[in-house]
Length: 88
Image (cartoon, rainbow, N blue to C red):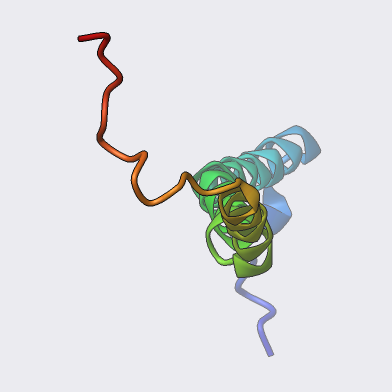
């Protein structure tokens, strides 16, 4: 079928074949590294958001402890707020 036609890569010396093959793999490696460098910070931020921002249970626990602490204090007598003692 293709007796008269030969592929240029098939007639090239083995050193050139390896060089061309390595070059293509190099492009792939660089491309994948670039994609990884773009996606790594995005993944880090999304994990932080998941753990910090959307964790409402921890927020409720902390606010509940603060509220309990505020309400457990003994209130002042009604007449003591805003008055000062003066020796006249």
